[in-house]
Image (cartoon, rainbow, N blue to C red; front, top):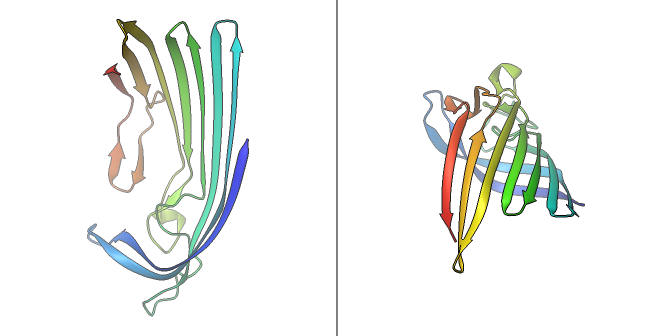
Length: 178
């Protein structure tokens, strides 16, 4: 287990923001306060020929505007856009005789899409589950990896950036030569 905390004052921070027409352009934030906590835990164990690995991560992020270069101060102390306050993930991986199976879960907290921080201008929290299985193969000192992944098993309709929908359930087949 490990955890860390941070506290940063950023001056003249450049952030790309969309305007009313949806065109992204750089914006200078005179002062931003970014602070938060990150925690990680991992447990690995071996039960005879089976290896188990469990990981969990959590992040709390507060990134707020403290001073602005424009005259409008109504957004002071508001969270920066597309910066979720809460994010978490966990994974479980099982390995047995070159075969592996795993599941990953991701939680992205709600994100504001506008500096006014109104709920109507936010994207909802998203919970995504992915799974994979595969086999490691060795031939004459050569190593290969065959895997199949199922992403977004729950087929959630979601966006991490407004107007950019991400795929529902989708599949990946991978062949990797190492």
